[in-house]
Image (cartoon, rainbow, N blue to C red; front, side, top):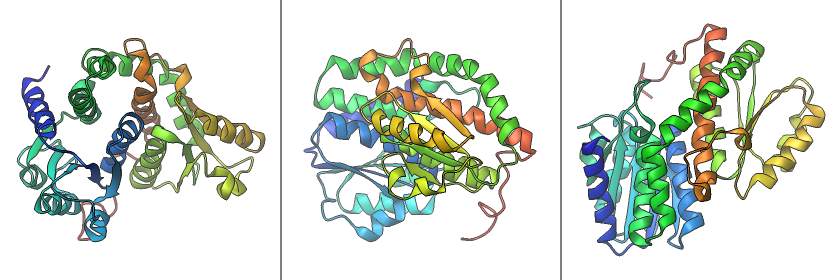
Length: 325
C-alpha cells in the first residue's frame, strides 16, 4: 500500500467529514470526466446528498446556484494541465467549496489549484488500488463510510485494496483471445457504435470518444441503452457494428432489451457481459459498482489489439497536444 496515497486520502476524507455538505460536484473533461461519473452514480444510489457531473468549462459557464461553501467539488485531470479543469477548480474554490483533485502529475497546475490533492499511479506496472479508479473508489467509499458508517462501504474499500488488481488480471487473461479476435475482425470498420446504461454508460462514452475517435480515428457514438429505441435503433443493420456492455446491476433490463433487438438485425455485435466476469474477491453487495471497472480493463485490451491490427498505435494524434485549440 502506498502510504503517501493513503495519507492524502485520509486528509481529504477527514476534510469532507468536517464540513456541512449540501451537494457534491464531479468536474473534468473527456476521459477524466468519464472516470468520475461512476462515483456520482454510486452516490446517487447510496445517499440523499445531491450530486452532479459537469464538463469543466460548462461548470464555470453555468455557474450552478447551489455551488457554495457547502459544496464538495471533485475534479480530475490525468496530466494536471487541462486548462478548463484547472479553472473550474479555482472557480469552485473561489465560491468557498471544498476542492479535491485527482491527477497523475504532482505539482501540476491542477495540483496547486485544489485544496486537497490525490496522486494516482499510471502505466502497465501500476497496481489497480493505486491507479485512477482505485484512488477514486477508495475516496468515495471512504467518504460514504465516514459520513454513514456501514460495513458495506468498509468492505468495498477492502475489495479495492486487497482484490481489485487480481480481478483485473484474471479477467484480462480470460478475455485475451476475444480481444485479439476483435482486433482482427474489426480492424477495417469505419464506424463502431458503443451502447450501455447505468454505471456503464460512461464507459461506452469514453470508449467511443477516447479510444475509437481520439486514439483510432474511427467514427463512433455512445448510445444509451434506454435511448436506443428513441431514435438510434434506426441505424441498426446487418453490417453495422455495436459494442454492447451489459451490467449486473439495476439497469441491466435496459441492456437486455437493447441487445435482444439489436441482435435481430446486426451481424456484428461485440458483447461485453459483466455476468461472465470473474469477480471473486469483490464483496458481493457492491459488485454491481465494480463490474464497470472490470469492463473498462477488458475493453482497453480490446482497443490495444484493434490498434495493433490496424497498425495505428493508441498514442498517435493529429491535433491533440500539437497545436493551440
